[in-house]
Amino acid sequence: MMSYQLSKSDKEFVFNVNKYMENAPAALGKKSPYHVEFAAKGNSGLSFGVMQNDVKTNGVARKQFKTILANGGFSQKEIDDIVSRAIKANVTRDKFTPEEIARMNEALNNNLSLVEEVDRQNADRMINSVEKAIDAIGARGVFNSSHPDFHQAIGRMAHWSNQTGGLNEFTEHFSNMKKDPGLQDIKNYLQNQQNFKKTNSKQNYASWEARMEEAQKYAHDKQAGVLSKEDKFNHDWYDNGYECLAPWAKQNPYRTNAAYGYDPLVLNLDGK
Image (cartoon, rainbow, N blue to C red; front, side, top):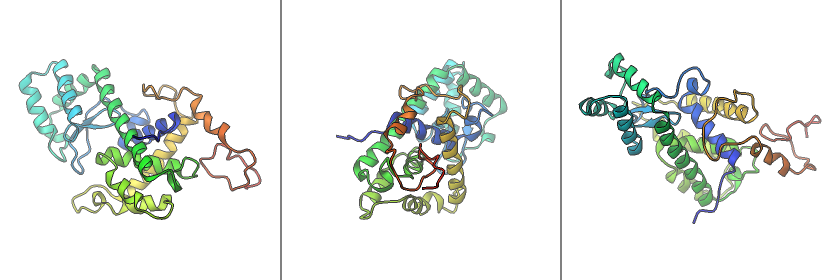
């Protein structure tokens, strides 16, 4: 039985990291997440929602997408035709007419509760996979919440899980690591994955890492209240404004080790 659980603020953090990684313009409020998207990479099909729910690889998303289209006035023949194209690997926007895309977007915007239901399920699955991995690996090294790079670790784990469908291989790799893992070990593991090595892949590890750093800052800024309060997602674990302060109270005020960027007590003027 799994016993490890992320805190509410950590769950919020990894959700926001993934939100930015999947669709940065939507995360920043520059476009709606309730539009169809086309990653055109890997094994992806058409996707929608904050979690970029993929109708090719996610059966729940595909079923809900059909329901949303039906609610939007699409005939069964139209739905079957659209879905047959939407589930093609590397599907691109030009496989659909502008009218079809406009109607799909309208249907998504008129069925927000159905979109958010899929988002919530996938977010919970993603978070559960991170918790399950840490439970199996052990809260050691960078997987310990007191480690300065803990958020860097769980942010990468969460998005990698959402991108690949789980963390089974990741868990096995780090469970077998004798030393206490560090952030560089995670980066080395990810860099050597086939997703970044396939000759037909549009993913580049260096650019993935650059976006991850941006996503980490986005998630930290959100928790610090830098971004709009309207930019929220309705989870039962969503931070109510108090949970994010909990780590501050838990810190030892008599520490003498060097401060680090994710330390709530990072304001340390003598640099110790």
